[in-house]
Amino acid sequence: MREAELRECDLEDLYGAVDSPVLAATGELLDYTDLIATPSLWASNQDLRNIANAVGFSLDQSAAFLTDPDSFLQQPWPDNEDMAWIEHPLMAAALDRCCANYAAATVRSSVRTAAIISVFAGSHSAQQATSA
Image 1: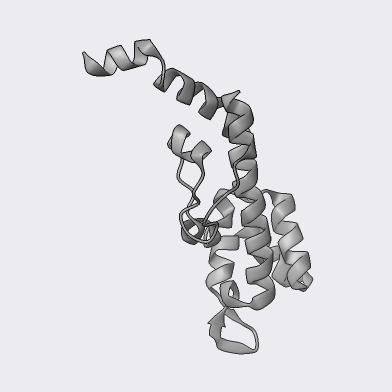
Image 2: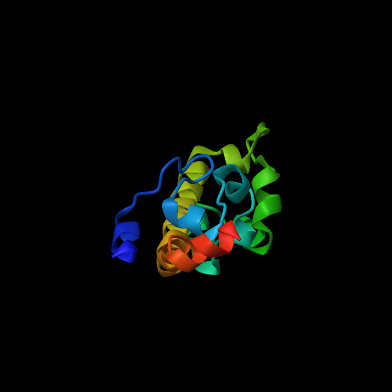
């Protein structure tokens, strides 16, 4: 029953610290500002290729992005030295989409664990253990 309830919960505040009862129960923290600048930690190779394609990178740009996406995002645009790639509108939109998918997948994969934790946290034996 609890698992079904958790599966119905929506993600809140996707562009800050992601708010989810599933993440709260498992103790996981997903923060957009941390994730968006470090896709090497969470994006799959296919995700990175999809981002490169969405932005319309040349072969050289794609290769550089796929090799070290975190550093690439901090480099300036070729035609605008004042703006980093992470600020490019197409890049921002592609990263947002990919990050939202990652957060949703993380929550989906943790639902059963969160349900088990919440059931045991409310059980009689857990209450006795915390009061002892």
